[in-house]
Length: 201
Length: 85
Image 1: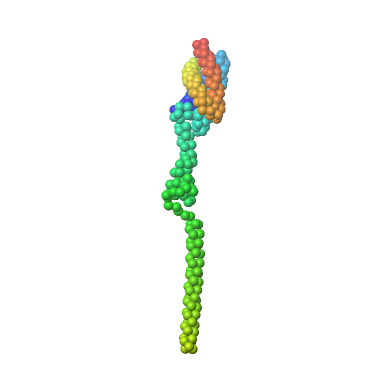
Image 2: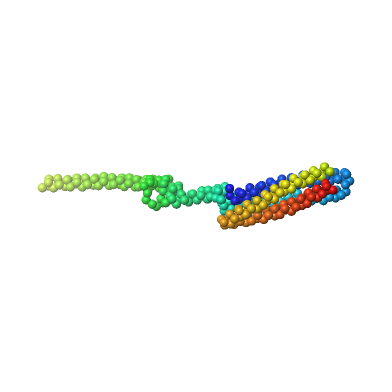
């Protein structure tokens, strides 16, 4: 148990004792009041004056005990608030409840940063399942995965290339056919000219 | 007078409770000193301020208890004297 827990226990014990004292004071005041009634009934003037004084003293004492009780409970609230904050106060013995939870929270909150630093965290958009943030821009043996946007761009580019290739192929084919026709025509004209020359000879 | 005897008995019970409260107060102040030392060792400023305030409150409560105890003890002596008169 830490020093703060020990203090809380002690102050709670004090508050309980003060509460018991307040109850006992109330009973003492009531008992004195009964004695005063009896003295009044008997007409014992000396007793009456004395009991009035004792009654008033006890009533004031009980009221003061109540104030001390409130003060102790206020201190208890303050201590409980401090324990909720954790830190050095509760860490005196190294086993305080708030201390342990406080350290655990700090470790937890630091987990993400440490994971990123050691490359064990979540993968980036273009990363992989192992490398995490460190894998950005580094060569790795992991299979890359591409975002849908890149895939869409790639598809569009492939389509454009394919269409262009098709067009070019068509043009080439047409050109080839045309060239073949032209060649055939020239060839026929040369052949006819040769026959004409042979006949003329 | 039986009523005075009852009052004396009630006041005696009150003194017992006050004695317990006085011991508890001293123990609480001692524990607060330990917590204050721990907060100081760790440099926990909030803990130092909080424990110092608690210690002041407990010391004030302890002073009140002592004053009440003395007053009640005086009342008891008065009742005892009244009974024996």
